[in-house]
Amino acid sequence: MKIIGIIPSRYASTRLPAKPLADICGKPMIQRVYEQVKQSTLLTSVVVATDDERIASAVRSFGGNVQMTPVDIQSGSDRIALVAKNNPADIVVNIQGDEPLIDPQLIDQTIRLLIDDTQAVVGTAVKRTSSHQDLFNANIVKVVLDRNNFALYFSRSPVPFVRDAKKDEEWFSSTTFYKHFGIYVYRADFLQYYTSLKPSALEEAEKLEQLRILENGFRIKCAVTEYESLPVDTPEDLLRVIEIVTAQNKHHM
Image 1 (cartoon, rainbow, N blue to C red):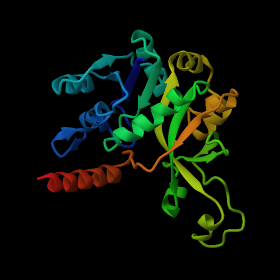
Image 2: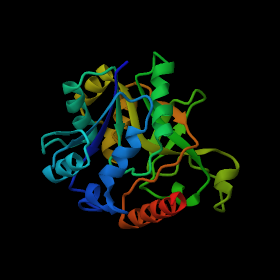
Image 3: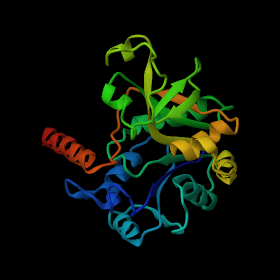
């Protein structure tokens, strides 16, 4: 089975310009992501998809595989779909270019969703959270699951809303909250179909592409993981990642 990992990477990030090239202890962020992804045992190939020659040049300089995509492509999914069209595979994995700490085992756990369930067309990863900060941070996407770990809804708001919670800790006493990691595993033909659909109303409201899948009547299977990842959305996130990598480097010395 051919399983390709594609890392979409854009230069123009609104909150953190030139994010993929941000230095993390001597390596650009995109290299950190690429090296983590390459450690997956299930991926048969890995490629960075970018519209920017500066990123492409950085990837080539560390020996990575990179493919250029048009500048006018708006979404990460469309960028992935275009690269997937030119690189035939059975399963396509979308790994965000701003997750330098993503665990290779998290990637494999998510891929296994589609290997183990032949009916599933798309999978992603979630983790239980009991952090009030996670819950009310709009950058951290929350997800509600059904009893079979299919997603019912994704939101930037705290979902489910605990009506009777008076204090912070009461939010967590009666229900389970999950935060979403931005990794997607698609059957190759479903990815092409999904990206041919028009953006949906919920997707536009929440600015979450995966809602297009749910709004069109398809299901997203979720791997409930114990692994952690820290997406870099802000300069503060970047500093946190640098601290973690610095600590890891000291530990391995």
